[in-house]
Amino acid sequence: MSGENRVEEMASAIEDLLYMGAIRLEGEKALLSAQFSHVATNVLESMKLKAQEPSDVMKLMYYSILIYMNEHLKMPKALTIAFGNDMEGHREDMESGALVSTYVAILSEIWAQNNKRT
Image 1 (tube, rainbow, N blue to C red):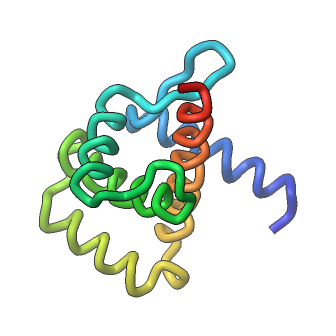
Image 2 (image 1 turned 30 degrees about the horizontal axis):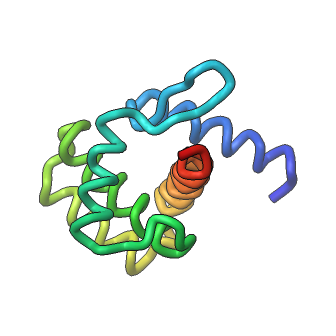
């Protein structure tokens, strides 16, 4: 993928995350929304993940986006679970897998940037 296509993909994913209400913009900064932060904090505590470990942050954001889709976007629980199972088994073969991977990367970066400030 060319650099220009990657920038377009990231910009589109940021628009999606804004539309879903998972992130918000404050001036020049992107922040996790209060609702998404609440979900992520609960996942972090229940899974006993390390907030500074990059692989744990990726897991945290992946599970958080699925839970957020269920709880705040009202995606049915059975569909959310099926989608998550399909993603875990076939992510590379799914167009939605690339989208979710991009969402997770963006959310992880925002999480890391916000945690550097605190």
